[in-house]
Image (cartoon, rainbow, N blue to C red; front, side, top):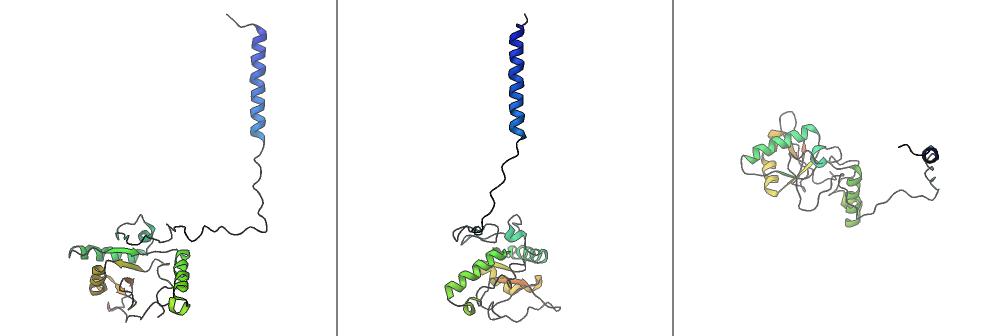
Length: 195
């Protein structure tokens, strides 16, 4: 049985009306975003924010030299990464577990460390002995790595030269860089990060 013609016309009219209203709703462009005012300040997420991609690790947390999925390890200079992985393999054969407590750092995170040191020590001259600025830190370039625990530091101080790895600062037994000369010798220790 066919519906009466007025019902068909009414259904056709409703469908046409709905289609027209949908087309009109979609034809309107979205409103523009609000224009920035002159008083807008840059976004500041505060000192309590955790810089998870900048090289930050919680206290006491270390990484395997093979954990390249973490940018702290994965963004190390390839030559440094290869050297620390080779050293970790050799150390493991001697029951020493080489761990990374810090590696690659973003410029922003390094600057935060430096600024915190200046506030903590009360002087840029003193802070520079313990923390390099973002402009001078080898961590920002992915060319420095901090090692833990102390047994691994001692092992790397004694054996690191064969991998090109050298302790750089006398006051940081954990900080290593690729620094051997043509004869495979490490340079004399600098007293601290200030040189």
